[in-house]
Image 1: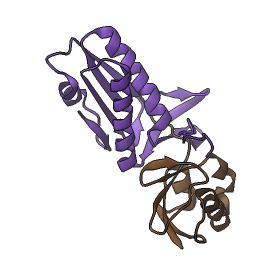
Image 2 (image 1 turned 180 degrees about the horizontal axis):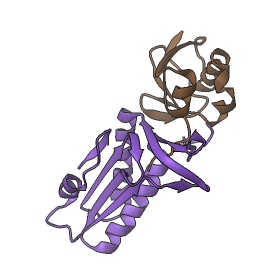
Image 3 (image 1 turned 135 degrees about the horizontal axis):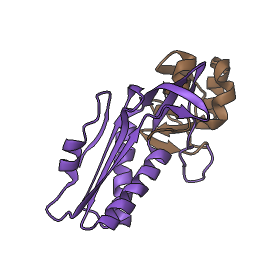
Length: 81
Length: 145
């Protein structure tokens, strides 16, 4: 299934896109989505372990199971203020 | 209450007016400002990115936490995005309360929580390079990313 993924900050800069579509198998978790990102964009590999995932504007754990059409965002460590 | 992510310069006036009630005896106002050095590096300017919809949602959550923990009469948060020159304001947090101690304490708590859970990111551009600052890993229940 295809999942739309929003990218921010350093991840946005590395990939060069604000939003990408990643193809993952049915029932994939957000942890697997992160691995998929690393395969598709090897430049992100060193940063994958620091990324938290948000679905529907809420942080979710790594074992969260994705569904088609989920609005996913990959959130690097935050540094506002 | 007022919660905004904006690329425009931040104006404290409307924020203070939005959080003040006739019951308020104090308004604590926090400015986060762009500093000219970090880790011994001379910082030239900052650039902020945000996930605006979620950042607003998380700012409202911070305000809910503040209201649950302190006796306050109002909470408002503004965060700037885009390029900020040294000395410009990146964050404004205003908390009103009946008395000053609650206002100070609640404002301090709010700033700490903003830095932990609101999806905003800072890039430092310094002499000889640039770096997206990795601050806090926002927690989910089990704490694992």
